Length: 274
Image (cartoon, rainbow, N blue to C red; front, side):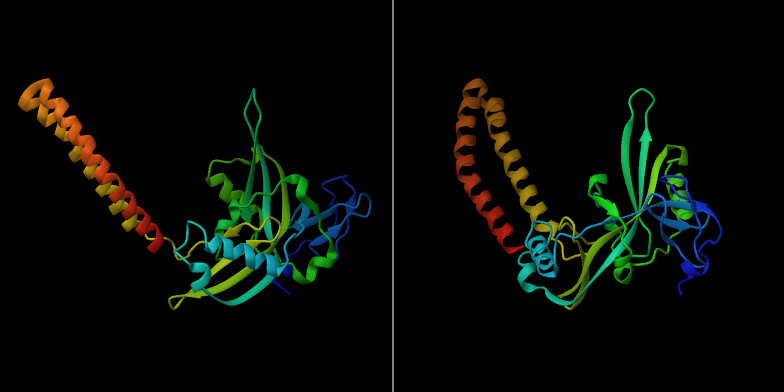
């Protein structure tokens, strides 16, 4: 029994949908309302809706999504070929889902996501959870569902620290989302990436990212060349007036036509190597 289950509420509670009385057994935190069929989660004295996001990817497709991310622009070149997968797992991970409404004359709606359990990939709070994709939680998922360990009052406290008062929260729910967690190695270091099995989006806090220094050097060199070329017409104008300025401009254009292909070639070489 987890700490969350041990402190789970007992007594009479009311469905968040129809207001019907709920009578949970001791330690029971996931319930289905006997009156309207809504699935709810009991967090201490609070009852919230309980949803889940249905997966659309199996493990093979999730691996393919991970490979596409590894081959993208954020990671080092050829990470999809050089990385070595060391493990994978699947679970329904719990997230706190909040709908925030602000504005006096014009109502602005915002969805806020916070992890409901400890995770090394906090980036999943950027996950998009459209309300239309959420389904009533099914007890058949219990075996693969991660039990929440972050209480709702604690998360509401975090939101208050970010100047988001409870009065602006119009809806709150617990959502279990399908996640594939992949462990992989690269250059004797271990990394973790998560693939959300509903959309195929990949989340990772730490990963072998492209080195920024070579790109900055190419950008700096290009800026320096452009600055030097720009001074040629100015120098000609100072020496010979408008005539010198015209000659300098021609020289600037000629040298620019020579420098541009060289800089483009250098940029292409860096992109291919990094």
